Amino acid sequence: MAEPPPTVVIVGGGFGGLAAAKALRNAPAQVILIDRSNHHLFQPLLYQVATAVLGPGQIASPIRNILRDQSNVTVIMGEVTEVNKEDRQVLVSDVDRNGVPLSYDSLILATGAQHSYFGHDEFERYAPGLKSVADAVGVRNKILKAFEQAEAEEDPSLHQDLLTFVLVGAGPTGVEMAAAIATLVRNSLISDFRRIDPTTARVVLVDRSKRVLGTFSENLSEAAHNRLKDLGVEILLERGVDQIDENGVLVAGERIASKTVIWTAGVTPSPAGKWLEVETDHAGRVRVLKDLTVPGHPEVFVVGDTSSLDQDGKPLPGVAQVAMQQGRYTGKLIHRRLLGKSAPRPFRYFDKGNMAVVGKGFAILQTGKIAISGFLAWMAWAAIHLEFLAQSSLRVSVFVQWVWTYMTEQRGSRIIVNHHAAPVGPATEASATPAAEAPALAQNR
Ligand SMILES: Cc1cc2nc3c(=O)[nH]c(=O)nc-3n(C[C@H](O)[C@H](O)[C@H](O)COP(=O)(O)OP(=O)(O)OC[C@H]3O[C@@H](n4cnc5c(N)ncnc54)[C@H](O)[C@@H]3O)c2cc1C
Image 1: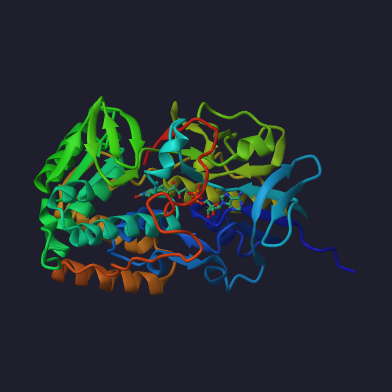
Image 2: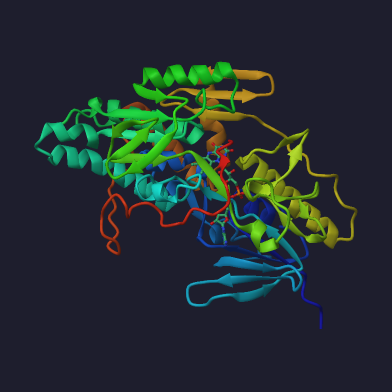
């Protein structure tokens, strides 16, 4: 009887894991991709779900549907809780079973990151982060409900707290969210209410650093800052958040009353380093070798946000392009190994550039020596984001929605979704995912 082909287990169907699975398309291997959710999520557009431009189904696709034509891949929905390197097994829990062992010949860990509250896990109750579809729908509920509550509230003195939106963290997600909320209140909602004036809403962006979008050049950061101010966003820099509770935030000793605080300040890697018991960097990301394996275990690869690799003396950033290129590299390396071919050259990241959108028709773009801001950068941003959505049906649907929103100011998904399982309230709408114990990485995309 013919021997079964070697098994490649991929944990995570995000940017890194999916790219690895696709690169193994023609490999003589049985590929098992495990993810705790059933979908691949395009995180760069999460903020558009949170601000009601797009619906969740426009930025996420079932992983098994994306890989339906790849007959050597089996997709399993389950959560990996442990890795046993010596026995070459991962332990998987699914709906009705815990710790089911699954053997591998090669293992790719692509388990990403989650938001971190820098040791203040108590903030999560009042300031949800943005990492999953559930998070985005929870934030959308919070924002839309604030307007509904204000309209129903007869005492105008209570309107201001309800209509103050505070974003903690002025990295790309915070800036994109702040600009999108400002556009929502100034344009989309303008004629929908009778008792309140949505344009009086305050949008406040807070960060400890000296400038917004600190990973971009100073000129681009300044362009984004000016654009945010034009949109009416209040920017509080070099100020830390000391406290967050149901009544708002305490920023450098000053209280800002708000019923909607959103956390966009940082992420922390998955516990892959703990599962493997290998060296990690200060943030808990697994230190990998130049072929993306872990020392002493050439069959174990770690890619994307949960791995740490320096290039030209600097750590690679936690962005989708790094994860995709690493996933693709790993898939190719394993394929070559299975064919008995020589190993490829060490991994090298090709930086195609960095961008962030700041409201309708305005983005900043930095690639090599090119640094532009404005409408042209926004067109490039839109084209690139459409290209990288996982399926062509999503590209068409998102394109049509963007054109419609651009022309009419109308948002595509202004629905408040209440889940019957949990009581409705600010504390229950955020994802219940606990913040990990590892120290946080600044959001570095
Ligand atoms: C709001 C937001 C906006 C962003 N915008 C941009 C942007 O504009 N440009 C950019 O380049 N980058 C952006 N990023 C960063 C980018 O999304 C990440 O760098 C990228 O997703 C990393 O890919 P990954 O494969 O490492 O992890 P992910 O894409 O996060 O995938 C990890 C996968 O692993 C699964 N998983 C995790 N743990 C387990 C487990 N124990 N068992 C089973 N499955 C598990 C998860 O369900 C998930 O599907 C953004 C991130 C966020 C949160």
